[in-house]
Image (cartoon, rainbow, N blue to C red; front, side):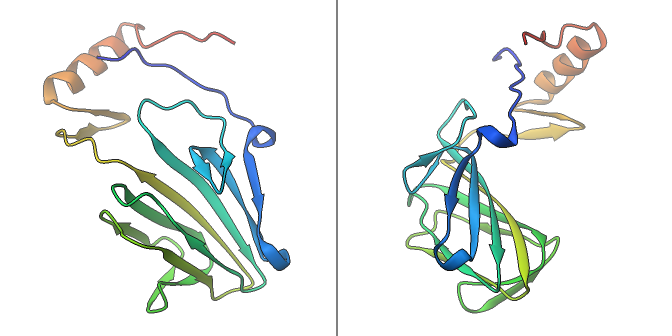
Length: 155
């Protein structure tokens, strides 16, 4: 099992990509969008970023073909790929999308969280705050947590 760690990340550290015509911005937390990188260190290659579309703006996402991509609508309403209308709270999953994903805000302001990464091709089990590969690992994580062995803070 990999040792747990904590990464403090400040808004000021995020990579920011301004969209054309004052239509919003993309704040990159991890990975890279159009050569702008995010500050988070990750165990596998992922892209994690917020998109804030303003003034009924739109943008096109282009993730690697072998990645799975998911989009959480945090605020507003949007049209996805010119045909699917999504509202706040909707979670859209794209399995190994080939090509581009078009996001178009249907409100004055829309906020999205985009998560994208290469599938790990391993079982995934979650319980409470823990995500592991087996039930045994989940039980070990709870035991470590109860015994105050759940990482250290190094600030």
